Image 1: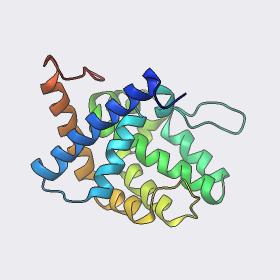
Image 2: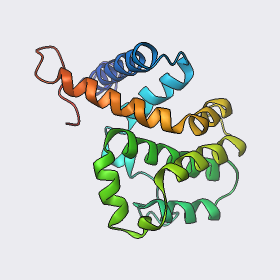
Image 3: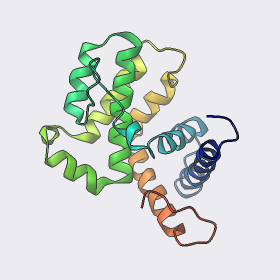
Length: 180
């Protein structure tokens, strides 16, 4: 994909939208002045707009991992940065569902073997585990992952507020309709 392609322009527009609304929500409405954390969350939202990113974790055989319990088992089978990546994905996955679509998270959890776990506890735990495992050049900084663990509940609440902000904007002429 080239820099000027329609897909890259849409992606950049979407990222600017999420960056702006996330910064506004966290800095102005919640009083959270943590640019690296807010940047991480806006990138997460931009990335998870695509369903293949939400459900992008796969086994070495290529099977999609759709449930947190399966992701946890996969994390145990990996080492080093690959294990960190799985733990980070579990944190991202649970944070996204609990913050943006909590009603769907609860339905997903109750209808699967994930009913035996708590998404909030798993999100916090897995961000912390990821922060302590070896990183590669594409990894999020350890301190940001640790703050995501420590501030998980606040981030869930903040992402819920981000969703409300974009829903309030729906119908405005210049507002993109997103994820509704």
